[in-house]
Image (cartoon, rainbow over all chains, first blue to last red):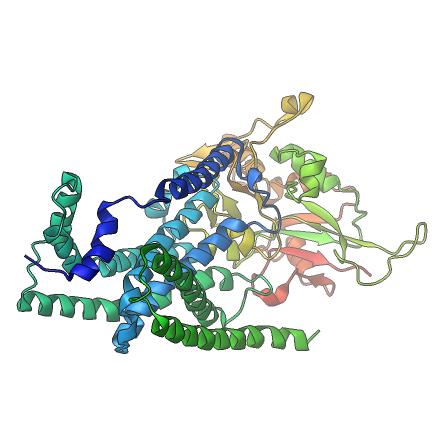
Length: 305
Length: 242
């Protein structure tokens, strides 16, 4: 039986079993947005991709932008939980889960964009049957799949002790489904020393493994553009340029998510000034690197005009 | 082995756009409304446009106009950038050097349209429609089999299409030679645009045969290819004006 501090019990466990005020209005608004999206996609399926307003030569429009954007902000999780973990920055702890959740969900949204963007989504399976490994899209399928599986694992591993806490501290009247879910997710976690050693080792391995995968994912996305001979895209700095931009926007997404969670769940004591200040410093330094790449890309072209 | 190639003599081209129209009727390219065309969704496998496309110099006032035109089919590159980016091998170069497109395979990701530096690849944004009597004038030829659908076969929506050097004409010429029990000669087949050309500005033939018209013209002083520095090695060769 794992115990939890009474102060934290109120803050951290209670919201999972009680629906907060404002949940249903928020859900309704999001469902409306979602419904509108489904309506537009069905239109696109029935009439054709012309409905999107894309044309020639802008063959790729908002979907590709969304794809790159969402895969980009998914780098928040890797940066906070893997890179900072390897560097031993302890202040990251309170916001780790937020960052990892952004990674997993943003990856789902991002990958979906590619399928929505296809003219013939019914032929998606052909990429497995007749794949041409020279095509950067296929590299992308491989790297994004690996990144998704890796980051879901990486989200889940540190979740095991927390799931065990929830399992042991369920209120009496909690739904059986919820109790069963926590029991399943906890995987028989008892909090013994040997269990902790094993878990820490697994997380450490995953942290090191996920960093090169994350870097490769956004590099390959940039290569989708850079391997063509289009003027402005055929650039050798696109790989690092995109990775830096991804981490930059990932921190931005993390700021929004952690501020919202801090406000809604009243976690002012846990997510404090330290997290915001340190993350802000990282934000500024990534901004500087990104600015440097932007200048490096454009000055060379501009000088020739 | 034959290596199909086209030579376009810009000195003889009168910019009548006959090649574009012949291509449209031979290959069943769908028509679009003027609004859609303004959006850049017109499909012209064989396009005719003024050179340069965005004039940087004065072209003059009518009737003292100084303008030049370029006709542009698919370049059927030796090193085509479009086939390398296709994730499902829907577009491929066959043994005769033709860059072909399989409409049954294409997943509509439009990577090839982005990869082609010549803009010869077109996407079907909507289901193709033919208004009124145009429907009755469709070319009935279809090149298909083994999960392959290409040539002038009416394309479904959501796939990419392109110039095939009239693959169906090559097919028919081969079959005719077969049925007559003789060997196929490269001069038995030309694409529709070459056949129709008003100024006889287009030549077609086998680049591997050193005696063919295209081979002789390709070594002309006036010969050039589009975007030679990109490294695609086009098999459509232009002869420059003057």
